[in-house]
Image (cartoon, rainbow over all chains, first blue to last red):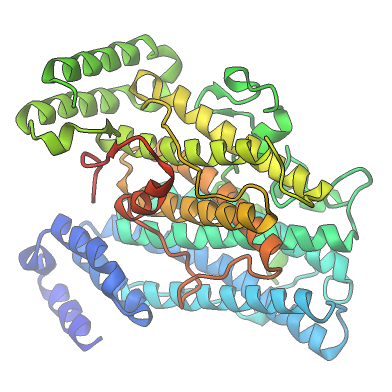
Length: 289
Length: 232
């Protein structure tokens, strides 16, 4: 970071320093091509470096992107602390996550979320922003008493986990458009977005096996059918409202081009829907202490 | 190799198609689409090299990226359709139901792109699945896994090449469903492998269009010209 620090210091005196070093487009292009050659551990730093180069001016765009990254970081903190607490409860014997595959899967997902927290934190710092970190004390996973047994009832734990993953997918999707001015950050966000979707798919399969809190007549699938949560409580419904969409960009997907197998269920499953930042904040606020 | 004249006719037809579909496809950002088309035409006239005019041209700018996605969805939809012509030995009811869902999702994606692109859509590609063993579970699922992972990496790698925020959102709506598929198929093969193959930061590893097409090429008979796709 010495070089970056030096450049940052120069920037305080001469905001045009990056434009003088190389053009914004060249910086982005070079970085995009260069990405695969950078050591993975160095990637967040490299993003920050490129970021500063490209967005030394105007600062408004840079701040907007850091805001999105901090929003993403808050959600990753929520998830990572959630899985850390659940895994610890399972080890302590107070949450009955079955040993073997289920325990391994929760550990895997926990580790991914922790890695996402670290990635975003480093990227924000290296970009000249201040990461807003939330720790265990900042959360109330009972959602103010709505889910009092979330860390003692395995079925409820899985239900909340599914809701977090599906919400996370929708949250990243909703922010993609706000990252278009920075190709590297956009690609990184997309590469997290699809991992959250993989988690959602797996947690849903775990819920199907477990069967707890699954409403009668509902087959929990790896994907979202209509606006069904597949969870026997209305408390999580806001995370699924809007997923029932069957029209995409004015094109009706149901029965498209004569394919009668494409009914409303299929049409809604085939496209996941975004949530706005405001919608996501409303959903997750009860989980913040 | 089409003659310059026929190339112009195709472009003209594409332009006319766009105008016809304008009212129901205002989401396409018609002005952007039209200027992309004009640029394509200009580019064709300027660089009349054989290499840039052989094969099915995916096109340039956002149209090119949408055609790229359309090509990948054609492969996936055709693959799962063929899986169901003669399901593999020992397929369970649950596997049949979920793989059937996936087939229909991929058909939804393919037909969506076809309609969204209108006259700008590439043709239906000739595919070659002769290397796939459709008779066994391993044969089908290993290829399904490869296609789903490839699709996810392709959408993730193409997002930054799109100029339209509407298209980026649409790609985002589709890629997370592909990732759900990928995780499910992976778990069918090896339980718990839903997100194997990430980088050290637990990020997906995206691929460029050239990387994707080099892999997908095994299954495509029709020659594809991706040389006009945006690269940055």
